[in-house]
Amino acid sequence: MAILIIFIVMFFFMFLGLDIFISMAIAGSTYLLATGNGPLTMISNNMINGVSNVSLLAIPFFVLAGELMNISGMTDKLLDFSLFFIGRVKGALAHACIFVNAIFSLVSGSGPADAAAISPILLPKMKEEGYPEDFSAACNAAGAVLGPIIPPGIPMVFLGLITNLSIGRLFLGAMIPGILMAVFMSLIVALKVRNMKLKPHESKMSWEGFLKVLRDSWLPLLAPVIIFVGVFTGMATVTEVAILATAYVLFIGIFVYRKITLKGFFQAFKNTALFSASIMALFAVAGIFSYMIAVEQLGMQIVQLINQYHISPLMFLFLCNVLFLFLGMIMDATPAMLIFGPLLLPIATRMGIDPIHFGTVMICNLMIGLITPPVGALLFLLSKISGLPFERVTKASLPFAIALLIVQALITVFPGLVTYLPNLVFGG
Image (cartoon, rainbow, N blue to C red; front, side):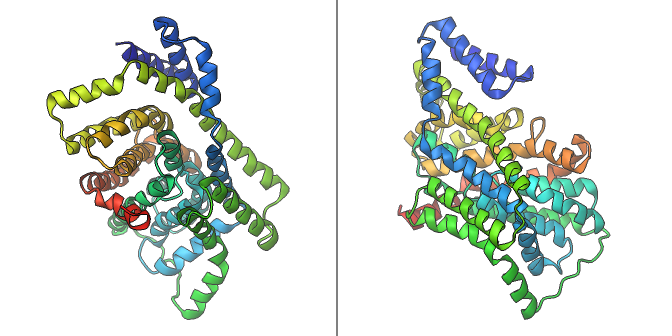
């Protein structure tokens, strides 16, 4: 009962408009004061321990790499690379939106960062070619969902840090689901653009054209290669790879493309600091909830319910999907992951569910919440960038959300879609 009251307190303050980390801190303090199950000094101790892991440095550096790619002009070159191959297809810009987000995801690892970088470039181009404004905004919002899923997704780093799972395995586990999501969203684009009257996109396939676009884009394309080689060969830790990728992008932006100005440089650092500060605040207070869950033996209570009602592993995954889909609709994915990941993962493992499979299913589910109301962060962001009402962007995003849910069902029922690559590279 005590743990239920704490969650009610947390959601109450969230709905009042307080930041999530403040709501979590108040709820944790309320629990300690009401139950006496620990001294108040443990709050400060947990907050310090929560942000003391050096691997957390990977998060701001991946975000900074994405910011620097944008201001250095690398994003435009990735768009040109994508359009070269699909420029003749009807709806080429919409397909390119999905494709560029997938490539950009290989560096930034953040949905909002991808949307902020790519949408201001694509939305005017799509308007010029006759795409409906709400469809354009929805396409950009949906494409940015790939940011946290396709490696090196920042949520994968979160989960690896709080559960001691291999981040490399989590990265590879999300690869096939991310590709499937991109394919299914491209199918939605193909269905939607059939009856649209669009201006034809000029594109000529030629060997000379290919060499030109490759010459212009090979340096941006090398950034994700650096990340993959570093992580999956074990040559460097995730933090070291993030720092190396940032240094590479910074070097190319300053000395090759010469587009990173001092003003842009500081703006990128400012955006990265703001995003990272909110994440670190959540990590600081998450330890309080972990302590409460351990003291109240919530995990053992869930295990007893599973045994009492003879819940199968597949049914458990289904119930978790429902839970995380609901949580993704009403709160940010990060606190949901920090609170429920360490609680449910040991239970899933005990039931014989592969931990990488469970972690990937959880993260993909929560990321769908980025385009579901009422708290869909990408819907709000694209509403702001496009100038359209939130309701119009939300309605236009519904087909993409359905496509993502279909992929979610597939990776839930067929664990091999998640575990094949990790087992192939690291051994089963």
